[in-house]
Image (cartoon, rainbow, N blue to C red; front, side):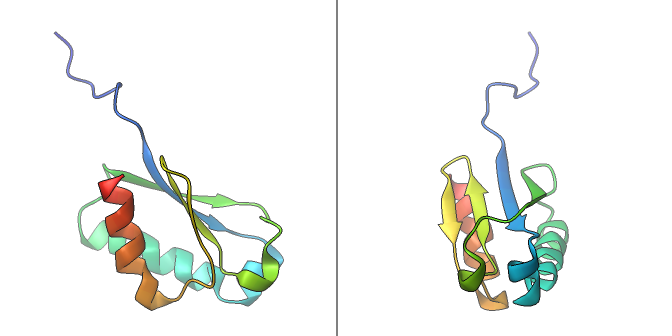
Length: 90
C-alpha cells in the first residue's frame, strides 16, 4: 500500500506580488511568512506562492490561503501567526 498523502488537499499561502500590495509591504510580509513557515518546520505542510494583482490594491497587502480560500486584507506582521495557524487547521 502506498502512503503518499495524495488524497490530502494541499495547504498554501499566496501573497499578492502586484505593485499596490508591494508598495504596502507585501514583499516584506511574504518574506516574513516564508521565514515563519521554515522556522516552525511547516515546509512540508504549507506551500507559499506569489500571485499577480488581486485588484484589491488599496487593501493590501493581500494574502489568500487554501484550501478554504480565505482572504486577508491589510496584512501586518502581527497577522502572520493567525494566517499560518488557520491554514494548518483548514
